Amino acid sequence: MADRPSIFARLRASVPTRPGASILARLGALRTQTLSHVRDRFARARAAVRRDGPSQAQFWLIALLVGIGGGAAALGFRLAISSIQTLIYGADDHRLHTTLAGLDPVIVVGVPILGGLAVGVILHLFTPDGRAGSVAQVIEAAALRNGRVPIRSGLASAAASLITLSTGGSTGREGPVVHLASVISTWVSDRIHAAPVTARDLLGCAVAAAVAASFNAPIAGALFALEVVLRHFALHAFAPIVIAAIAGTVISRLQMGNVAEFRLPEHSLAFYQELPAFLILGLVSGLAAVAVMKAVFRAESFGDAVQSRLRMPGWLRPGVAGAILGVIALQFPHIIGVGYETTTRVLKGDLGFQDAVVFAVIKAVALAITLAGRMGGGVFSPSLMLGAMTGLAFGHVAVNIFPSVSGSESLYALAGMGAFAAAVLGAPLSTAMIVFELTGDWQAGIAILASVSMATVVSARFVEKSFFLTLLAKRNIRIAGGPESWVPGTIPVRHVLRPRGADDCASDSACWALVEQGARLERTDTLEKALPMFESAKGMTMIPVVETHADGRMDLIGAVYHVDALKAFNRALIETHREEHS
Image 1 (cartoon, rainbow, N blue to C red):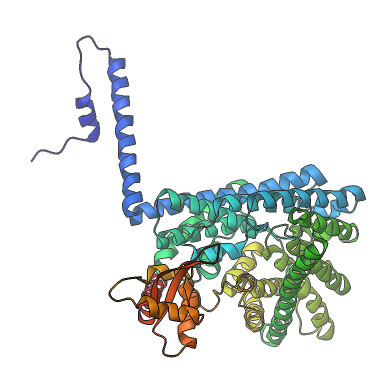
Image 2: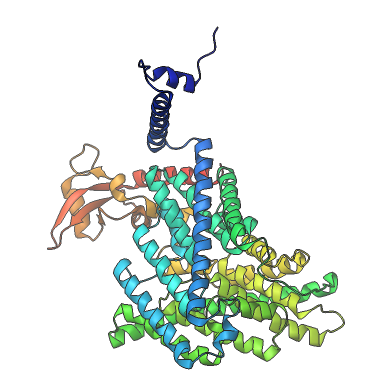
């Protein structure tokens, strides 16, 4: 049997040969035919992906492209912050605090005010609630929004956070880059009409790439996406997320090089004798992290109260916060920006006990002011800085009390950095790995893990497992309890109701009788509201569903039966657990 002719042979045969036609003309026609064929094949493949979803090979290729995009976004965000800081202050974050001490006070105070005002205007114009998006919204998107975040407000949040971190905000860059990467994955998911499972996996890929590129930490990037955002370690998501994390790391290293973010002095650990001290450090760090998280939430409530009482426009709030930060920075310039210069000093043990405590308190206050002022930014980098200061202060005490047993203060600073950040993120695995990869110090693993484990156990008793999940819970979005707690909120009652007039639906009179007793659901409600109503009203088999108009008039739509609601809930749980364990 003769071999089938190659595609190029078929293309050559399809090019008409005319008497007198030049070789160049035939080559041009062949090129046109080839490009047309490639375009047709690409169009058919794209249509098949949009219609049927990507195959495994296609999905891995898309994951790689999303990883490149997420890594490029994180790198671009970092370089943009550095460029703007250098333009305004004359130095980037690695020398910013030293430079600020010698600048004109008008610049130190004025720049955060102008930056805050710019942030306020952007968020007021382009976001629905005047808030910058963060990791919390990405977690919500993975659980409740089919792996998608709003693109318009996501881009606005990235721009606002960029201005905040460049002009005096006291937050971190990991939250904005995670949110920006999720915008990229959302755009891709919308283009290919991705199913919810595929979109969530692409979201994890984008997050992994962004974290890996931001911290030069590929292992931690993959773990962060699985542990914090997707909140499961399903095998089907692991490989593409790792591919994306590698892509993001390569993008970062091409520009920044393969170097650890922090370089530490030599230190030693007397393992058996000193381990109890690191467990105590974990306890202290966990309690300190809880105190800082609660301070942030209370500052937010206080800011709301002040804004309401003074009738302050929302766009002005970040500017006021910027003014307060600028005044504080006159005496404590370490609060400005991400804080790598000061964190490096702390990890080297260059601060005394009193300075470490005072700097930590002031940094925590500045973090609360920035977030309560709705200026944007993340909490992870400040957590690393606060944890390093907590660990250093603890190390000074331990070394002075037990000089013959304790190791170096810098080792306690390193362990405190991991413990504090793990308590805030509620993610011991990825946080410990980020600390290892940021410092290149794998010898201190036992000490760090001991502190991290204790800190996460302590903090989980006071908050909803992490800062992000607690933030969502305060907005009545409860994800910390697992799928059983949030799945009902994803099922609209209109999808399970029996329509009015159907043979298996209750009569109008029976429905209206329950409505008059106050037992009713709106057609926009979900099973999150319906199931507790069935539980509280013993013996109730159905709840009427109505549509209420602006004038108060109600139209009967149908009724939701308890058995139908439970079946729908059970099906959704099965699908969720199948995804998490596949």
